[in-house]
Image 1 (cartoon, rainbow, N blue to C red):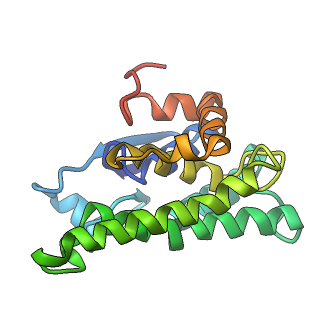
Image 2: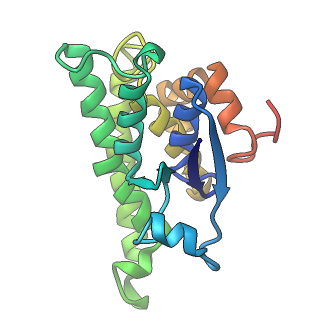
Length: 208
């Protein structure tokens, strides 16, 4: 059984969704960052989620975990063939999510990591401005196709479906500015495996 170390409504929800879609036998270990267990620290020395453990081996980094799950369960179709243009698009947006989008959210949630008390408001304001610029590219992409890789759901969609819910922390909502992103969120959440995984996350009902 795969053990997922998870924090509710965090980026690890994308891994939870991938596990649900591929049908792996898995358990969810909810992490309390104020009381990290020895088991969690061994699996994730940096104390971050997501991380999965299996057969005395742990895998960190959400993108890596989901790529591994996709390769382990090719019949689930979570990634196109990587040597195709559709595969290139899926990879591009997946890396954009983890490497470009996510760090900006970190600046909003944990501004004290980047500035002293006097500059925190400025750090958050600049981060919000950056978010709208970054999500504008996603909105443009989704105005031309239903999913980021094209016509089919991919791992990139799972991650963006998680991050867009963090807009609750913003004064202006991304989904109001970008209707294609709002439609994409609803489209992804409606997928059977995703709907089950997101139950109890981001304010959704516990059962779906």
